[in-house]
Image (cartoon, rainbow, N blue to C red; front, side, top):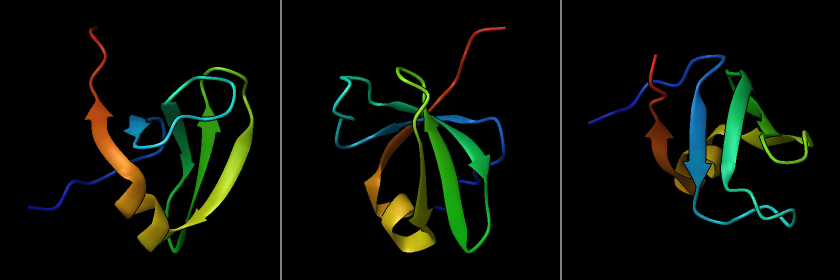
Length: 63
């Protein structure tokens, strides 16, 4: 089963960022994924395989 990720989605990664947050916002998809830490706003560019391997779960936010 494949999960689709779109711009604006919030994901939890397996490893926490040094700031302590493990939640990231997807800014760009494609061959590479650009994600932003929700704790400190740092952005990171990851290749697709590394991003997909590191994602623990897609977070659903209440409306």
